[in-house]
Length: 460
Image (cartoon, helix red, strand yellow):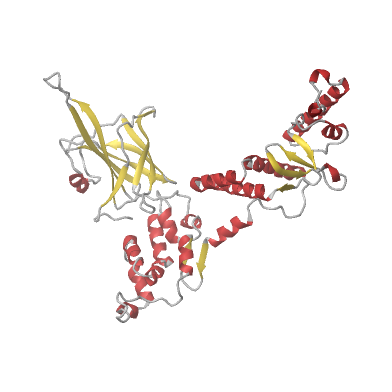
C-alpha cells in the first residue's frame, strides 16, 4: 500500500471495532436528526461521537449534522451547522439564532417576500424572492428553520409578564407610519406617494401665471373658502383636471369636505353591506376620503355596462367548393339603479347601442329584457331574480308566469385605477322557480362588460 493511500482502509479490511464504532456514531447522528425534525432541542455531541469525528476522514464523514468549533466547546454553548444552510448556527443552550451577515440578510429579504405574498403583492414578493436567493441559495431553508425554532420557543417558554417581541420588523412599521401624512394645519389627509410629493411643496402657494412676465392671475383674489365651495359642486373628473393645473390647485382639491361628500353619496347599500358604515370603509384607507373613493370598489350608476359578443355560424351554399360563414354580433346591457334594481337586455346587431341606451328604462318591454336585483360584496357583483318582462300585445292581457329566472356573478375591475369600468363573468345560472335548482349556463361566447357614461343619468 503506497504512502498516498496508507490512511484509507478498504471496507473489507477495516477492523471490526472501527466498523462497529462507525455504526454506533451513525445511529447517534440519526437520532439527533429525528429529534431536530420533531422539534426537540439539539443536545451537544459528546463521548464517542466526538472521537469519531476526529478519527474518520472527511471522505467518510458526510452526516447532515456535525459539531462545529470543538476546540473551545467547554467554554461556550455548543453550536451545530444545519445541512443545506451551511452558515446558520444555533446555540443549543439559549435557543438563539446566529446567522452569518450574508445569510441573515437573505433571510430578512425572504421574510419580507413572504409578507408581501400574504398581502397579494405578488410582483414585489417575486422580486424579493429572487433577491434572497441571489444572496444565498439556502435562504428558504434557513428561514423555515428560524420560524420553526421561534414557534418552539413560544410554546416552550412559560407565560411571563415580559413583552413578547413582535414578528413585524421595525422597518416595516416605520414604513407603514410614513405612509400616513396628516397636515394638521390644513383640512385634508393624504397618504402614500401623494403625501411624499406634498412634503416638497412650499407653505404659501399661489396660482402662477402662464407667462412669467405677466403678473399674478386674478384667481388669486378669490378666497380659498369660496374656491372650495365651487369645487364641491363639480364632479370628481372635473376636480382632478383642475388639480393638474398647479400645485395650489392640487392642494385645494385634496380638501376632505369635497371627497367626504362623494364617499357619502356613493357608498350606501347595496354598494356596501347593510351593517357596514362609511367610517369603517374610510379607515381601511388611513382616513383618506379621496383614496377611499378612488380605490374602494363601487358600481357606476351614471351609465351602462355593455358587452359586445361575437360567434361564428356556418351558412349554406349552393356551391360545394364554397363555405359560407356568418359572423353574428349581439350586445348585452346592464344598467344599475341606486335602489338595488338592475336592468338586463340581450339585443342582436339590429339594435345598435345608440338606439338602445335611451330606451333602457324599467318600463321597456321587448324580447330579451330582464329586471332583477343587485348587490356588491367586495369586488364581486351578485345579480339575482332576473325575470324576463314579456311584451304584451294588449294592455288587458294578464302577465305570463315565468318558470325560470336567471342570476349572474360578476367580478368588478378598474382599468385604470378609480374607473370601475369593467365587469367580468364569473357565473351565469338558470334557476327553476318551482324547486330552486340552479343550472350553470355556458359562457363560451360571453365577453366582459365595459362601462359607457351617459351624461343625462345621475350617478347617485
